[in-house]
Length: 387
Image (tube, rainbow, N blue to C red; front, side):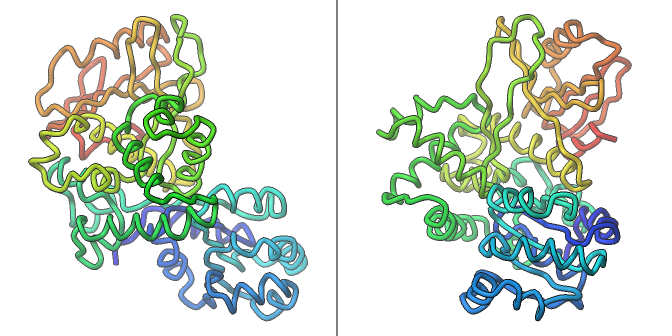
């Protein structure tokens, strides 16, 4: 079993809050994490009809039976529990009494903010990070290998080929989550939408263009993107909000939480196919941004991530705000450093102010180069941006 980086923070928070809630994609390891943190806790799966019926129809009785150390899995399906969780945890005042998990973030977050604000610590668990695999002596050998395999735990724990795992994952996701969140009648069309999103990873979202491609209106596209966000399939990276040189871009960029899933949707199954594919650079960029996102989530931090593009189409792939300072990260899949890679970084630093800006290049090569005015990091050391 591969240890998770988030365990230390989760253990700390269990000593301070009566509840912690762990959200994340299906099969990202939430239940395993909860049971690893508290192996003696009673485990209740609220996707099982008998448990859900009890919880929904008699929440008071349910929590009288299940107290003193309980894992409530997929708790968003039993919203009737939340007011009673508030009542009983306030009454008993015991830290770390309940661990809640959920794979539909927005639904769970809504219930938490309504009933449990101030009483629950919220953590987000994504698939394995490169650092977790490195610590387990299972490091990916090349960036291409990690882009293809992604990070879902079952691929590594059960030695399942990505070509077997991801098609089944998509079928399970479509059949369960989409039908529960949205009334999607044409699953074939929704699969086409998923594939279209994968082909646009790393690009600015154009809801109208996507709708025209699929023959649906932009309102439906926005709704479907919202479903993908709620289920931890994609995330949207907003443009930077300060007006450096009259920024004109207002729409976000779209990325996948896991590049293995994006590759499967694009029918990219081998390194040779990835090397020849038009999306390789975007998938590399997606991988690095997702890794930096995992690093923030694993420390229970709220990432302030953006991209930047000015009126001259100069662009920075990732801007990270840390207090008054900015970290600007340019991401290139190439394995050889080219001075042209630095052009936009220097331009942005001149606009933003050198005293408040650190600049980084993350590339597909193998050598760390700490230069006097910027840091050059190989793909498998990208997390050094935040060290």
